[in-house]
Image 1 (cartoon, protein in one colour):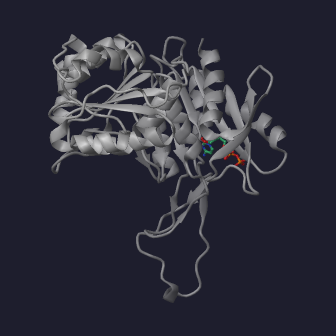
Image 2 (cartoon, rainbow, N blue to C red; image 1 turned 45 degrees about the horizontal axis):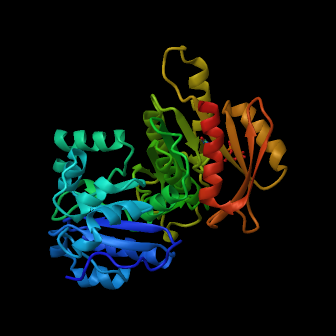
Image 3 (cartoon, rainbow, N blue to C red; image 1 turned 90 degrees about the vertical axis):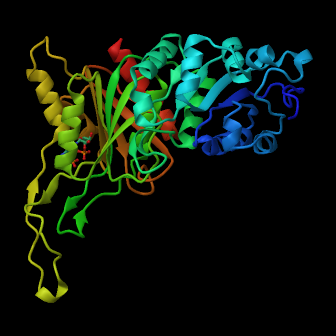
Length: 413
Ligand code: CTP
């Protein structure tokens, strides 16, 4: 194996240590490594000895452009077990196995990765991946709690298919989502939502006409997903209620999938009991067919009958009303945020909605003519109950989300 320390290729470039644990998800860390290197980060890969059974040293060395070692006994004169950690701007461990979490929580130092974790004074991100039983075991829960108390960021694993046939929490989140968390940590964004629980709805509801047709809308879910992703990065526990969104799950968020407005209402109301913040970014259909047909409407059955529509409940207004009626001692969302997509009279319509729905902040978007739906950028005016409107300039949806969380965090404080 090649020596573990060389001259850093690019002083001035952010230095990242990518720790790789011995899990089958190690192959996904190759993708994470590429995302770092292609965006100008200088990455040292430090796998555990057993991780090299899953992905070998030549792969890590070729992709990182650096030598790779798992042991502390190579190039000892360069003191790699201390230097790699000391020089890092960020350490991310992906996948973090139950074994690594335990060793890190207890300060063991039997290999290069655990030594690096002990000597690093920069932010440390763990992206665990393991079987559900291991993730849920009290020993692992205690180790995760210890690491979080010490300031490490432990991303909750995604729920889904695990090795073999079983499913449950334990999957490594999408590498692009882990990368976003790391990039934000490197930018030094605040973790001012730590200890808060937030519910975000995203996407657009579908109201069934028959088993194959529905009434829907153009919402892509991008802004709602950006809100969930940024809230996780700011330390919140996030439930994301996603209506018909085809995007990777934001790392660390608990995703509840729904289809119709009635399902979305059920999921949002149940998740919002005791939540600090609810953000209704979903585009909810105002009407649904009075009755969804059980069989497909056939062309051969003659002229179509008109579809009778009935009103859907207004979930945002219901949240506001519940809060208004709640006794003081009952937990309720302390901050309720609505979204309003408008094509005309944007601000006047927004002010009327803010008042009618009883929310604290209303993020007003102009839509149509290539704006907002499905685009990576957004701009908005946030109407504030009892305050002056705040303009959010055009920018990536993550930046718009951060600006919204700034206002939410100020209200929570
Ligand atoms: N909303 C909701 N339940 C509905 C409709 C909308 O909770 N049945 C929420 C949306 O999630 C959004 C806000 O209300 O946060 C405003 O949605 P919008 O569609 O702009 O407003 P509407 O109240 O539906 O009014 P209109 O469509 O007539 O403009």
